[in-house]
Length: 304
Image (cartoon, rainbow, N blue to C red; front, side):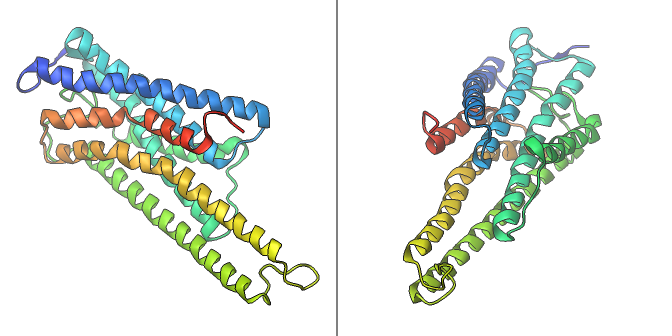
């Protein structure tokens, strides 16, 4: 049985706004994600290892590409036929789609936590060769959550994601819960990490000023100004990586998913105006180009 496409108001205007804005932006983001993958791969082939500030956008690019493929399949069917995916196909399409956002949320939260453990608590976190332990947590958790809410997938107005008509739809509550938890996790661990770095730097600076403490002392027990300066530069370099590189991608996360939070909140209250779908579709499809801007800002046009 076909699920008819029947938006409120003028269907032509709503259709062009939702799909006409979201899908082209998504295609641009897909190309941008491909560029990031190629750059990272070439860098890996040349250097043999990748810092976390490069691996992070690589994983995000993979998630963005996967998400756009599912979004395009889901929405282009409506554009071409005027109908959503039929019956069980709609539910399966929603299942595959939901894996992308859930992976994105968990990925950013896990990286924020790891960075705090390494910098704030000075504990080494072993993520395994090629980060397989980290990826197992991210993708395993996303798969488990996606299947846990399978019965609540279905036809929405412009795409297959959740069933409209329920004020407290479990799928909406689950997604809203994840949005909230991941946002709080990211903010808290980033704040704790940056606070620890600043305190450590302040302590080192105060000790260096005295010229008679352990900071900057050489193996002979004499103060070595050059060694103190090098230690400070090392600390500042870590903070620079954290604030300018890693946090750039996390900032993109907030920009990209804030419109989706509005969509999720509207679903909880069973309120679905067309403008909510418009901003949600734009947000969903904006991750690739946002991350590319940050990647080029961090790494430049050519790898050194």
